[in-house]
Each structure stands twice: as C-alpha cells, then as structure tokens.
Image 1 (cartoon, rainbow, N blue to C red):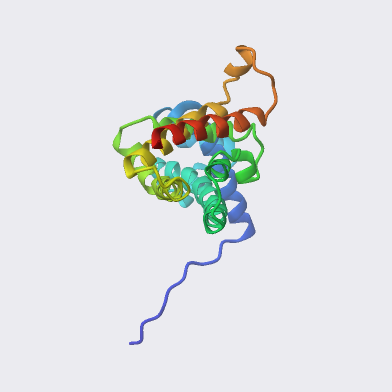
Image 2 (cartoon, rainbow, N blue to C red):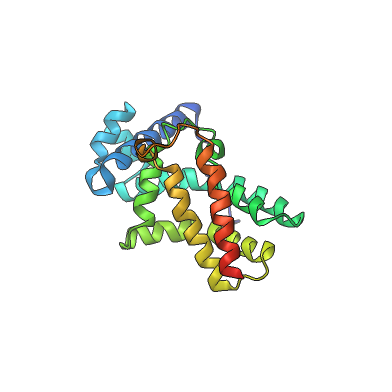
Length: 215
C-alpha cells in the first residue's frame, strides 16, 4: 500500500479566533497569577469559551503555558533575525545590534503596550527561575535567539571572547527587562514619561559596558 502523506487540516476562521482568544486569556491569567496560580477554568471563562473547547485545543495547562510563549517568541525571533542578518551583512556597529535587541516589544509584536505587560511578567518569571519547566521554555524558545546575538556581538566587536560575549548578552537583557518593566517604578523615582527615553539610554549604557569588558 502506498504511503499517504497526512496533513493537518487547515483551521477555520472560528477556530483561529478561538485560539487567539485562548492565548490572550491564558497570557493574562498566567501573567497575573503565575503558572501555579492560573487555572484552566479561569482561562476558559476569560476567553468566553467552554472548558471542553479549551481542552480540545490544549489538553493540559503545561501545553497551553508553552503555547503562550511560543506565539510571542516565534514572531520576535523572526523579526529580530531578519534585521540582525541585515546589520551583520552590512558590517554594522554594536549600536546597530543593540537597537535590534532593545526594540520595544509593542513594535516587534505589533501589539498594544498595555496588553504586553502580562507577557513581560511571564517572561521575567521564567528567565529568573531555575525550575525544570522554566529552564525548558527558555532553552526551547529563547536560547536560539540568544546565540545569534552573541555571535553578532563577536562579529561587530572582535575583541570579545566567547565568555565576554555571553555575559554581555545576559547583562544586556537584564537591563532591557527594566525598560520593559510595567511597574512604573522609574516614574515614581522621578523619570519622565517619555516612552523612547529608556531605550535610547539603554543602547548607550550597554554599548559602553560591552566595549569596556572587551578592551
């Protein structure tokens, strides 16, 4: 009997809308309550669907949790990698690479800034945790992008060794989390509400530090 290639059925518009609603609701629930505190029941209610439909698309909470990260990470990586390839091919500068790394998430994802606060909270949680689930998510969805940026750092700043480039990347994304932070702490401490200011300062701050450790 000849082998028959099986393909997944193309989802209907209503299924696509249901999945988008589920992922939006899951992002809000997990971003607010964490993985342990968020429930499938609450996600279904927020998405406006039945629990049976939720379980039809995502059989368990672990699968859904990963899907929320995958949706955002895939788009972020695609946009950044295209821009990064252009910069490296044109012998761009360290600042050019950092502008890509620090591009605001709402610009990367074409999403409302307020909506993304839940994703930012989820991302902060997994990147700062050492539990097996968090380590798996970071390794699967974020390490590949990190490796591209580390290579780009070494390309535009040849004085950097592998260790220096790795730590430069990790220090850079640590600083970036402050710019993404939805807590409003900078404002409480007296910073202005200029949305672009933290990203402009980030590039100068991190570029200076990277060049210093590579000297």
